[in-house]
Amino acid sequence: DAGVTQSPTHLIKTRGQHVTLRCSPISGHKSVSWYQQVLGQGPQFIFQYYEKEERGRGNFPDRFSARQFPNYSSELNVNALLLGDSALYLCASSHAGTRQETQYFGPGTRLLVL
Amino acid sequence: EDQVTQSPEALRLQEGESSSLNCSYTVSGLRGLFWYRQDPGKGPEFLFTLYSAGEEKEKERLKATLTKKESFLHITAPKPEDSATYLCAVQATAMDTGRRALTFGSGTRLQVQP
Image 1: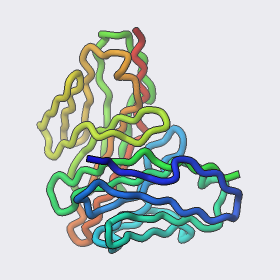
Image 2: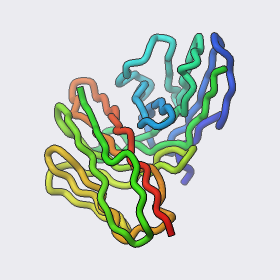
Image 3: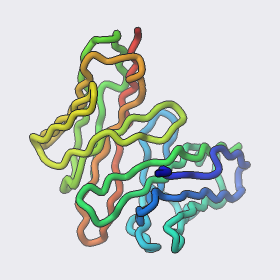
Image 4: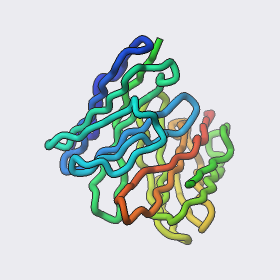
């Protein structure tokens, strides 16, 4: 079975631009979460979606938004990019509703803001 | 606020030299503690989930244990291919919202020399 897939793999933007990152979960998984990982740190939670509804939001500004589609894929949008938004953006999917709600991560999208 | 602290930040071992990585945590109510392995530029790879104090899990040369305040990842007779960053994360109970966010530590960078 295919794992979590993300696109694009790499992206270069300039300050003030907008970016859209995409994620397809593991088949059968209905929950998708987004994380930001800056170099040398652990991933930091941004959003979680389940059945197209937002389940949780981390401590990120309103420039960050996300949505989940009927096929459970998801998009993360970031507006008015800042240099500090440069990071690895990770998507994780999980089989929500079970005790072992383990999150499985995709390869990430490396975003560089110049 | 949930917190995870990992130590040491970096560890260099000789092939065959066993050691342990520490993960200390504070969480309002522990739903699960997760260990992941992350190779440079890639997404975290799931290793273990632990749910309650006293629980242990093993996979090849790795063994994870859990107490009420910390978890250990024991590496027995490591090989160079075990070189990676090992991340610890906690998931708190949130029955009202269904939020399942992971709070990560900064990781331990392990290097195993031949």
